[in-house]
Length: 337
Image 1 (cartoon, rainbow, N blue to C red):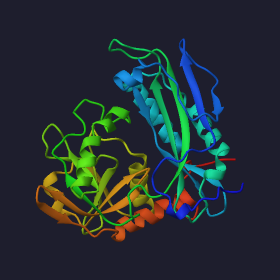
Image 2: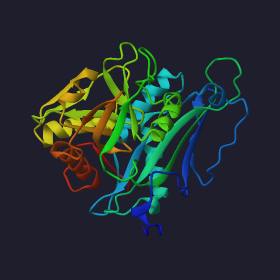
Image 3: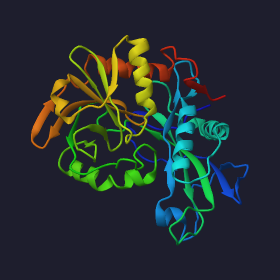
Image 4: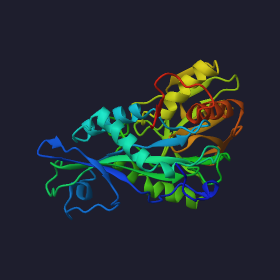
């Protein structure tokens, strides 16, 4: 299929309206058959539950053009499963896994001209999401829901591509113990908006959050998980019940072990260990893995190698798997045909 006439190398991480999106509605205890639409607008009642009580969950994934010209998605089955977990926690009806995957296939296929060409550095970002749509004024879950998927072509998540990031240790909290930090709910991101704007105004790219109970353990940033590398080349991955279980992080751990032969340690990482690491990176669907050059903890500065040898190998190996230049583990790639 002929691609859209776009300067793919210059697009940022923003919304561009594409041709089709998928929509399914839940009413009277069941999902309708769903389907594609060209209408990008949503009409709902002023008292819709999502507007009053933020009952919404979402996912993020990408479609790529591989080196041999195929259109593929990376591990969408895990996105389906994570969204099911998010729905259960938010008292929302689960959208079945196979239907989720079919919705992704339909959306990507219908917008295939918007999937950036191989080598452009861009991709088609996919946003599946669900929200409570009927009027709710008392504090309770909605009775009706809408599930949607749209795609938008994007470039790098952080401005400047893969240049090393500067982040700060935040004074504010991201998630509470036994709260919703482990699911992908819109409310988790709403509470970070004040802080990310403040960070940018202060010259930082992101906030690094610590656990809210003791403020001694590293968790994640507002938009990505974080990983560290020791001077000996060991990958150290912070572990916590209140961070989002990133699909990219899970994939990087397997890449580190199986492709690069690295030792991987998943554990609680203390904030007092920031000076013990040689490299650091932020990982997630949007960022893939972005090198961290500096972390500032209330005036104390810790510097890292940026795109060091390990972070660089992780980045190139994972993107190689996604782009079809490196063999993928079984089940990691869904071909759109």
